[in-house]
Length: 213
Image 1 (cartoon, rainbow, N blue to C red):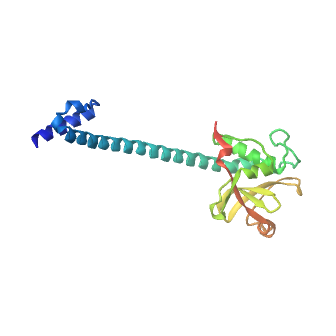
Image 2: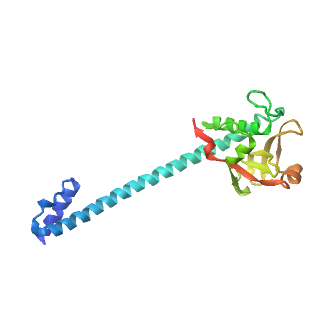
Image 3: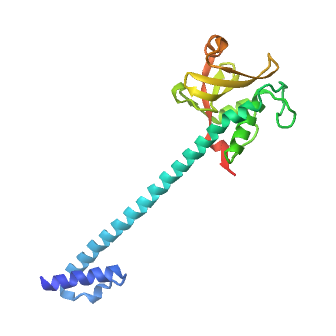
């Protein structure tokens, strides 16, 4: 037994210092020594794997936490950005940053652009309404956030901001009928009579539309 203990500790030292040479083990006790070496190597490899996995999951958690903070910062800037455009004249094809007027797709993209800038992000840029909708994901009413879109069956959309609850929020859009960018809230009679009765769904811009500056 004493001889086996010597071999065991010899194997531990050799494994730890990376100098394992089976030939150093007495030939009569080679099988036992080789088994010990394999056992020790398994222990070390197991610990290394556990360390790598721990670091991997730590990085994932940190990334998720950072992404969450960035998302929250962006959402907090939506209301500030949206209010900058209320009362702006309506013009088809109008870019609010260049023409001082806007249609609905330009308005929505301009709000995303400004909110992203305030949050230290970069927005993908202007895109027509159909293309913008291809880069959104559907969300349930109970999960609404500032910046989500309320979309009607005819494709018309308004952006949600100043969210107080899933049932109480403000909306902004460029109205062709009123010829300006207007705001109204979900307690408005028009909201109940027109917007809810023609609702297609709620949508959120995909994360891929935004990137760090």
